[in-house]
Amino acid sequence: MKSELEIRFWGVRGSMPVCSPDVVGYGGSTSCVEIIADNGTHIVLDAGTGIQALGMHYLRNAMPAHCAVFITHAHWDHIQGLPFFTPAFVPGHQLSFFGCNQGALSFRDVLREQMRSPYFPVELESWQADIEIKSIAETTIDINGLTVTSRYVEHPGMTLGFRVGYKGKSVVYLPDNEPFARFDPAKVFTEISLGPGEPDMERICLLDQKKNFFNFIRSADVLIHDAQYTPMEYATKVGWGHCSFSTAVRAAIYGQVKHLVLFHHDPLRTDAQIRDMLQSCAAMVRASGAGLTVSAASQTAPALQL
Ligand SMILES: [Zn+2]
Image 1 (tube, protein in one colour):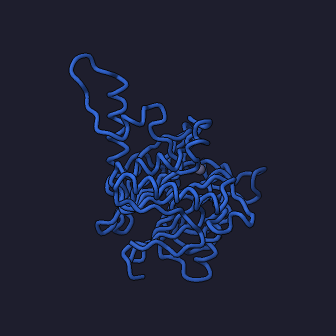
Image 2 (tube, rainbow, N blue to C red):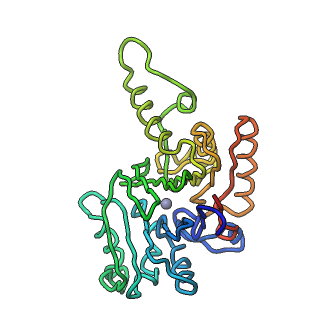
Image 3 (cartoon, helix red, strand yellow):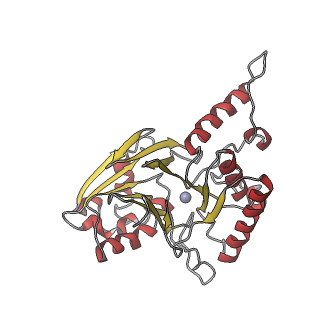
């Protein structure tokens, strides 16, 4: 590879996998993104159904010396490919899994439960690779020179987002996120401050959320963000934990991101509709005068090079 970081999309769909002629352009597998550094390190973000094809790719070509898999949360579309990730069943492979606990359920138990009878016939204990499973919360982890920083995001249950840094490049991964759902967009995407007098609790809360969110995505080279809905669809789905492409674009512009990748495509979204969304995004960017690039995550497009 010529670049320092490469991003490959093995699964781009939200909620559930789909297969039809209308979706083959962008792909129908659920969330799985691979980041490859020029030092040979592989980081995998989420284990939706896309990780099955990634595992087969590793076995047919070359298995990385060590593969670190970071899981944002335990909803099906982010873990359902895990029982079919064949490298985990092969002795000698080095695999690490990182993710957060879900209440009293440890991250290890989260992975184990979906591979327990009657849901699946082969249990987690059947994995024969050299496996490490670690519970994390908000932290920064070094993976062979790549830093992976985790932050909780706005989504039902405990859900993490990740920022990967390497040689001055950064990739932020927020596949399921509904930021600022209860705030006025006019206040979210403009500079506001606390006025004199009585503390305004709502404004304090908004400022706190803005600080957390925009510090996390600020100036990222690539932001892979939830864009499950159109603005019209979102109006009836507030609180579901996902956002519209227009919110993703506004956030990316305000956060001075260089390249926004629309992600977590709705299962009902066709290739033609994704292309329409990209045209709407381009119009928003033009109107703003920002230099943002917007694309849509695709399992069939060439890998992104950074
Ligand atoms: Zn999801």
